[in-house]
Length: 113
Length: 114
Image (cartoon, rainbow over all chains, first blue to last red; front, side, top):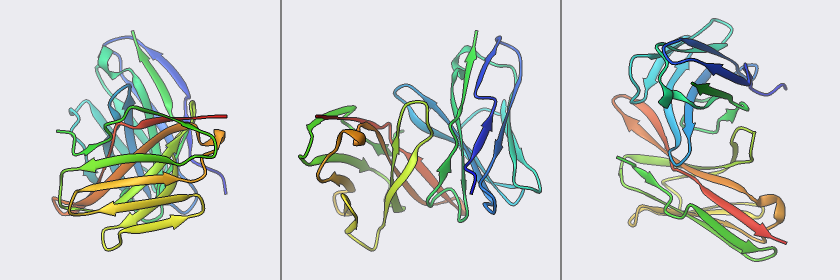
């Protein structure tokens, strides 16, 4: 089985711009979650989608949004980028849900200048 | 409010010895706990999990212990190998607002010295 893939792997954006990240889960997995990782903060949960429905959301501002398509692929969008949004964004998929064993992609490294 | 805490940012252990990574949590609603390992430039990899109805779960060299009264869990790696050098995250999940939520700790960087 192919693993979780994320595109792009690296991205440089300017403050004020918007960005869209993409995630393709493991085949058959209906749960896709997004996390932000910054030094010293661990993995901060952004949101989880299950069968195209957002079923949980972390404590991030409305500038962070996502969606899931019928083939379980997911996108995450960040509007009006701020310098503090520079981070590694990880996507994870699961057959059961975010609270069980998850399979992570390699992440997208976003740098905001 | 960090509900899952890994108070040791780093740990160094000699090859062949035991590595003990600790994790504390504050929320009694957590009922399922997981450990993940992360190498640089890769996403985290699931290691082992434990339900709150158990106090121990073992998988090869990895054992997780759960002390619910102390709200503490630990991961034991025996014997430690250089390939175990990575950042280890503990995670806790429980029901909140009608859904199961997962919260990760900040990670402990383990270095196994050959």
